View 1 (tube, rainbow, N blue to C red):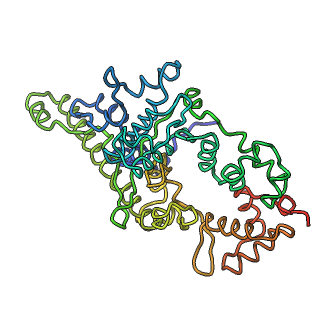
View 2 (cartoon, rainbow, N blue to C red):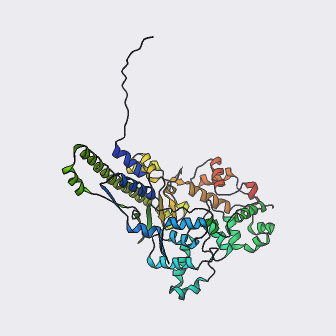
Length: 435
């Protein structure tokens, strides 16, 4: 067997360094981008990083001994020596609030007992903090929106209700039991409760099991695990009857390039040093350009979502979310779908109704006679139909599919079954009440 030399041509795609960096930056959230910038500054003598004043305020809370960093607070919590109130203050100060609202909520956090409950009547706090009742109620709502769910409650039923209302999908039967029939719940009369609610005892027992899985002392969950701080990347807020999008980039360090020193170094440097300096100035320019493009892409995406999902941002109702996919967004922005996917990955948006992953607002839909409907809307219609059914002869999934079709929502029986289960609603057998 002989040996021979053979030439072979091949075509390979190689991503330019600047493009590669832009792609990398786009998929970072604010925390990851901040860390990346610091790492690059250590490698590049021409790159200067200045911490924004916002970062200290954002991640620290003043105490009697000065400023405690987030790391210190977390370490103390794990050791069991930190007060959970400090962590609530930290979370509160991540929100964009007026000084007065922030001060009122801070005051309420300090009033919580060791179990995370508010023992005092909000009206008793009016004179102490020089606030009116609406301001105290607003502050209480802010505290109750923090993690863990249930903190700031004034009673055990309210604590459990606050936790239930964060669950997805919602559990309306369990919520109804806690809010309207708590006495029956405490006595354990499940048969009587089923009769009052017009449902089966099995459904009541399922709801009771969900209630019993909740935490009566929610702050114990803070002390049991290391908290993770989520920094919003963008805020979508209602203002003057419209929606306003703002990038939350105040957390990021400020980047500058020392061009004056660069020019001075070039005058006296040898050729090897000049090549090194030119490489570093180019890398610094790529970083600045990449950060700028990242901001533009995320802002464009947020503005598009604010426009497309305006009904949700004005009401906070999930069934108002419109069908909209990443592919739709890519077409509107004239970019590849992978670009949108990277821009959405690990990003969070602060809304008037809480902090959510950006991907929440990309919703699968179903073609209808009038265009399209989101999965949330279909689930809402299924809940509506079942709420009004005759419990002695509940609607089958096939019948539900027919009723939805009459509304222009065409989906198969199998799809109805899937959506019904996602709503936490039982089958006809589970929903049927004896005649």
